[in-house]
Image (cartoon, rainbow, N blue to C red; front, side, top):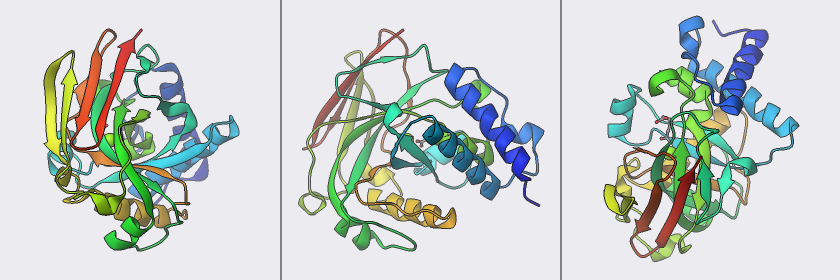
Amino acid sequence: MSLDHDAILRLAERVETAQTYATPIRKLTDDYPAMTVADAYRVQTALRRSYEARGQRVVGWKAGLTSRPKMVQMGVDKPGIGFLTDAMARPDNAVISVSDLIHPRAECEIAFVTGADLSGHVTREEVLAATDYIQPSIEIIDSRFTGFKFDLESVLADNSSSARFIAGGRPRRPAEIDLRTIGVVMELNGEIAALGASAEVLGHPADAVVMLVGVLHEIGEILPAGSFVMSGAITAAIPVKAGDALTARFLDMGSITVRFGE
Ligand code: 0L1
Ligand code: MG
């Protein structure tokens, strides 16, 4: 049985407060054990509507939990999605404040920028045809749950841990590049902290966009032209703190650097 509308609004408010004031909370299913994945997306939608009512603009979406090691690490069994707003965006070379985050972690991703609407059950080829360009990105995730411990329902309601994102490097047309073999090296304070190849993302990053458009369909949304879509982590998520400097180097696509401050 799904949660009633009041419970959905209460949970969205609980998550929004944790996100706004960077205060950890217990996972939502501790208090609502009957919560389903569909309920979790209803909470996420209520959260999105609340941010929009406060003037934020949805600029795109993210796929999360797209690699098998990450699903195992986080104890969940399928990928999910979250929304991205203009308030979460930071430019290349930014100093990102950590005082309004709980326990931030950074991961490297391929972003897709779309030039046509995508909706329903799409194929990898349709995603690629609708993509204007791909480009490097860094995602800063920040679970609002104590100890970064959650289940699938709780993390989806928490907008899949979305917190900040940075786009940079050199945009490329998808036809110019093999999207499965993009190598990434992430350096933290000059030392290699993580590395990987883009096939880590469901075997092909465009397949994460296929998944994402399918979930959007299930929640009654489409992916509009002009969306910025992060396809999922290529590298492990690395904890960051004030004083850290992070550079992500993408094969043939340039690099992104960010610093972290109080
Ligand atoms: O972007 C991601 O893969 C994160 C999804 C949520 C799970 C996590 O916080 O690691
Ligand atoms: Mg991510």
